[in-house]
Image (cartoon, rainbow, N blue to C red):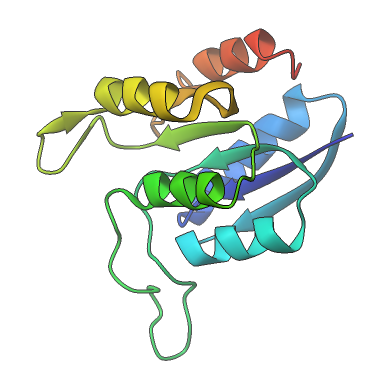
Length: 153
C-alpha cells in the first residue's frame, strides 16, 4: 500500500488529485490532504510513511484559522521551502509538484526552470512538475507518465 500526502490549498484541485489517485493507483493506502506549507510539514514530521507527495508550489504558510481564514498570503515558492525543509532534516520522499502557474516571480521564472532546478538539487526524490488546469484533464497523462517511470503504477 502506498500512502499519499497532497499539500494543496485549493479544495477543488486537491479533490481532483485524490480522485486521480483513487482511479489510477491500485495499491493506494491512505490519502492525507494539507492546505499549507506548515500543515504539510507537520504531517510529514508526524507520519513519515508516505510513498508519494503531491506538492503545490504556491500556497499559504499556515493553515486557515478563525483569525486568518486564508492562512496568510500565498507564498510563490512555498513548495520549494517544503522540499528544502525535508532535505535539511534528511527526510526523503518521492515528490511531484502540481501547480496552476506556468510562471513565477512576475513571469521571471518559468515552470521548466523550476523543474530543472529541483531535479538538480533534490535528485531522485523529486520526480517532476506538472502544469494543472481545472478546465481540462490534460495534466493527467503527464502525471501518469511520471508515475509509470517512477514505477509507482
